[in-house]
Length: 326
Image 1: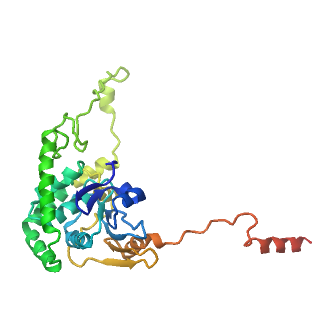
Image 2: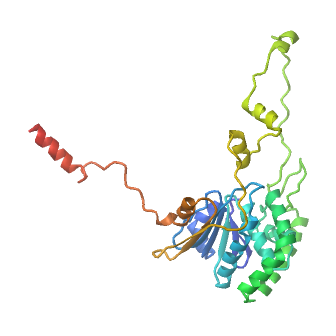
Image 3: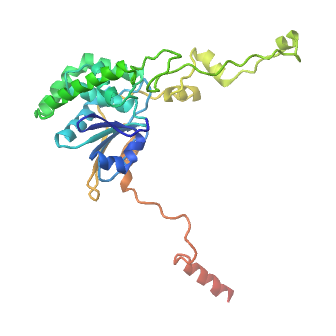
């Protein structure tokens, strides 16, 4: 995850949050457009064109509603000879899902084949199960319409043949890497070492032996009562244990679960920077968070909390104090 951004198709890269901040990598790969998708997506470079999507990495987060917007952003940039970086926090789940959806939309590949193309370029690519189901549903119900929409909006076929040929090369490379066990399909069994480190592996720690109790008798332990905890009370009352995700956190703290955003009526905030030359679109969240994400680089730096000694702001106060003393 920390080896830098990876090329998936000509003009299309996938990386993590650290890669999006690294000016050396951005200059090396000549990145002109950045698609940032995570919980606190925001614009970081004034000279880049941004699409900021605020979305969590939870299986119930609806990413399908953003596929068309992302496809337009990526495809328009590549048709203008731009280079696009798609990134989330780790560069494994959300960014990979968006890249797979785009490859499906501009090629005849299925979602599984498109995922193999991304994995051939970025071995740690591993969308969560909820995003994989969304990709499968997108292929079943919406892919034909999305391909037709893209062809009508972008009739140019400048990228079609080259993308398909590149995908075939990547699929062949994927099979080679799979046979050499330098890549996995995210299904390594417990106890088997995963070549990419994204699958669960068996623990090497030995179980700690139980120490026999010598100070308490069976009757004493039977009389002891376990104090009820908030977690056990919540689990037994509701019938489920809270998950380690934003939705689970809200249910554990008593706040209602975050509603899934509907696919229609996306609220988009657009900001153009006349100084840096870049632009930004922010989707998701509140109007304030979208505007803040789109205009982050243009925010002026805060002034110091206190003025240094000898500052002209304090000179009048000192002079008045001296006059009173005299």
